[in-house]
Length: 181
Image 1 (cartoon, rainbow, N blue to C red):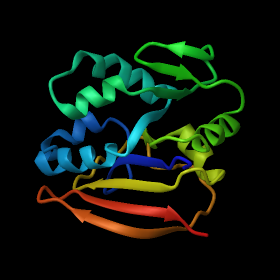
Image 2 (cartoon, rainbow, N blue to C red):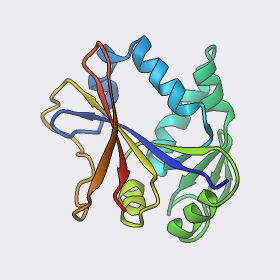
Image 3 (cartoon, helix red, strand yellow):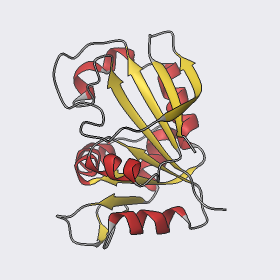
Image 4 (cartoon, rainbow, N blue to C red):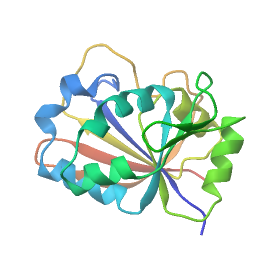
């Protein structure tokens, strides 16, 4: 069965995605952790852009002790990068070789679990443009950042279909969208 690509992105009410460590921690609670765990359950690999990979690889391997963290650390990671050498990399990673659209399409058509993609940036824009993401989970945090990198800047007009909404007591609302046919 072909894999599904699921993007999971934290975003403020004013559309900022950069530096969630600055504005997110007050909202990270049991409901947040539970949803993140359920989202990761059907996955058997992560798909990351280079900047997200660098940030994650610098912090996640030092964590342990809960099933979510242990799964993140153990599972394979696929990294899209034009600056890293293709092939094996630290933290169970493989840097994709060649055209990212072709490489991700190949991964998507392999048998296996979902590919969860964290972070939003250049890779997300590429995947959106080529309709490779099957589900978007936008975690809207009840905070205004005022400035920072914005969600999907410079993306062409794209219509998505709302398929689910989850509300947490903390005020986070997860909006789940799929591409329109």
